[in-house]
Image (tube, rainbow, N blue to C red; front, side, top):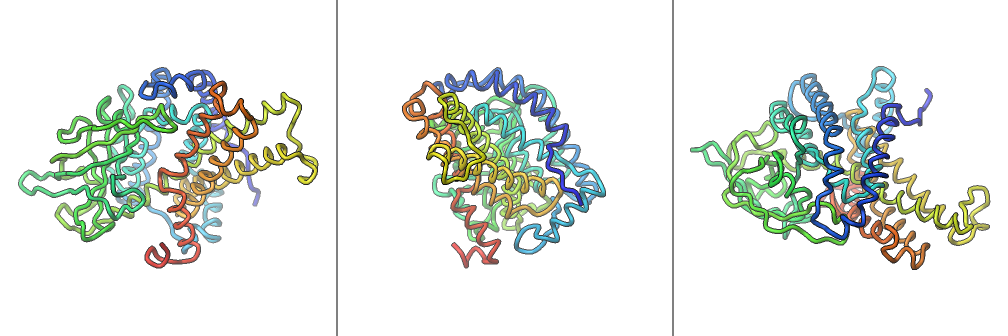
Length: 443
């Protein structure tokens, strides 16, 4: 069976357009937006909104068709043992590719995000879209919820989605989430109380658009992760209050905020998925969160790779202009130290990108991709941190000053090893999956 490595033509056409935006809209504003952290990349937002509306519409229609075929609102994946898709799963993916045209929606998305992050990662994060909220709704929402909450992203003015899980005392340890959701039977509403921190696009989603925030809360603290559920809080809902907009090391153009929930009341059917509407009911909430991360971790990986590629290409071209070109012919022991470093930078990028593409292709094929998603996230996070640091090192004083964007790429890079599950957490997921250990057996 032939294996095709070419990028699909529709993705190539899209990338040509996205590269124009990255080169001519994002790069020229990078330094200014980095220096003025809470300014909005208005030109970028309005330029991308028509494209994003079409992507949101296509993704929604495809998701509703899948739900109709499956007969419910759940995401259906075939599981093939502890190692993700495994050999049998890979064969099934190839068989599907031969017998029918697979969706490439996620593949298109990661290619676009890689290019936009090459332009500017902080600006990319301001892109008007359902984003992490959409990923959660797609992962565990019913068809009706997908229609109600995601249709708004296909029309009107720019709007944003956000997802809030992290709390002051609960970062990687999601079982320690303290935000509560109590069901009021008299009003048929959920009442949310708690605090969320480091929420990407919280201001944009809640205060400046008809957006939504998916808030993870517990209905039963004694149940740990099993007591978690995702709730959709729509923009303008009383009881949600933004209390802080973060000043950050990197991705400074991105809107990152903290908010509190004080008796925030939402309709009963704003809890995602087909669940019993009563206190303490059994929940698939945590599994839903993990399914969301399986979809979003390759996206973070793609963003990391875009930053790494920007740093690598600038470093390579700058050194080449000074007479030190890449050498792909000589054995490594004959290369100069900078040449060997450049070669390793490119190797790390390619390895991370291939892992990201694999995780994304499995997602598009409807296959289990948890192992691959976490592997891509670990690899990309480590790679981009090392690549950007090495670029600053090789460029010397030029890399350390604000004359170029090299120092900015170094600052932007680190977040990719932190959010959507830290490198350490994702390494644990990979180890547990490969070795067959449970959460309690390997911590």
